[in-house]
Length: 317
Image (cartoon, rainbow, N blue to C red; front, side, top):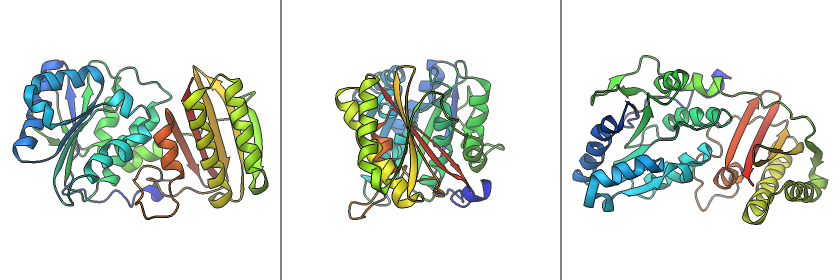
């Protein structure tokens, strides 16, 4: 898989993407607040998307200047890591005049992220480098060295070309930078779940597949807007399988840790590593299926292989 994902990771300049390692609130504020203030002083649009507690710290430290910053709670805006690039980072950067420098603080990984979520989180951090390559933007990503496991911190060195060590304010190059290898390593198989409802489908059974998905999700306890979201995600994924994935696929449904899970497998080869993570121009026809699923699901995991593609979506009950 490495050869399939190397090309998008070319030279980043003028894009800057440092990881900040911090041990306490003071170290956090010592870098994040000047980062924001320097951006505002230079006339650059600034956004901060971090978990709620840290968001409050930055907002309070900025005082009146916080009103000039777009503030987002990453626990909400980035619940699904696949939503962060199109729905948070690119949404903010693309709203600015072309070529205008932007600054963003994005903290997508925090203590409490589950093992199920983490592969999508670390792939997101790697893919930022492809999504913003050549853009005039700086995205600072904080990492709590006291709360996060060692393997998470090691992955941060691999997904960020530069790092700011704990207790420092200066960037230094990361010798471990290898985002393509991270994307490949966390392209983990999603093994079948025993006793899941299984429904093979093709072009003649798209409508029955959607009805089956909605009925099973309702039986498993999904209601209201979440049920509507699952119905839409199922429609998009099964249609993608028929149009782009060999004409058929398999739908599976089950419940897991307070979520209803929907999975679609087909024999298509999803070669575009940014599929579903880049905004689509308004005048473009098609190309919105996985993007839409990323925007509405609570978590999306994708596994690509030469034998096909699996997309698994979680919806909180």
